[in-house]
Image (tube, rainbow, N blue to C red; front, side):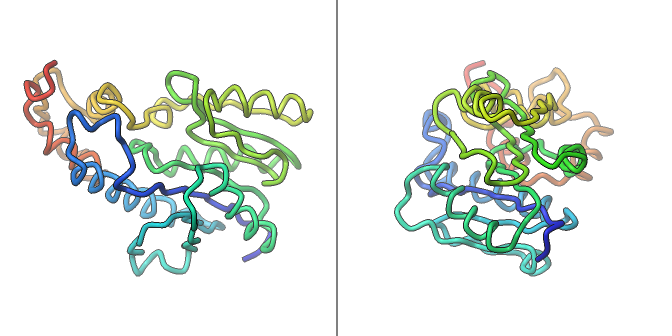
Length: 241
């Protein structure tokens, strides 16, 4: 590890405690399976990022694909106390190994692409100190947070975290860049989020029926978590919409 690397921090909550707002539509087993697939999708995407390492902060047992093992560090969280404490655990390793910057990425942004993350990292290279963020679609959460250096602000992933991080950057006189990538603003938290993610995943207007050309594109993307949701909600009537 050297000081040109970006640390990718991925806090992973216990799967059986995650996505409770989807409990009316998904069983606990289905929600846990969805979380598992979203983690796998994110690891596969981010492990292709050059000059980086992934820090998974979790109490879960996460099987790491063989091709990604050299890029991934799993940090045991111990007593689960939220995203901010998980980030602090990773920050200790980031400081020790002198990473240039860090990005906090939640597992539930299924439409994330490597291209978008590369753009955020590339923009920060011209700055000694900077905060870059992607807000959630409701602008109450922070879907992506880049800190350069990682110690420039403490994270505030609580209520209205986008405003919290925005205010901290201004209070500390730090350069601030907001990215409005629509794909990165889509997180999976409620059933409306699920519907939006599925629609953005190349669906036509008929109930979850794909065009042949779009099916080829889906196969190319190979997002297992979205495909899993498609399989569950293949009949629109099941959702009551």
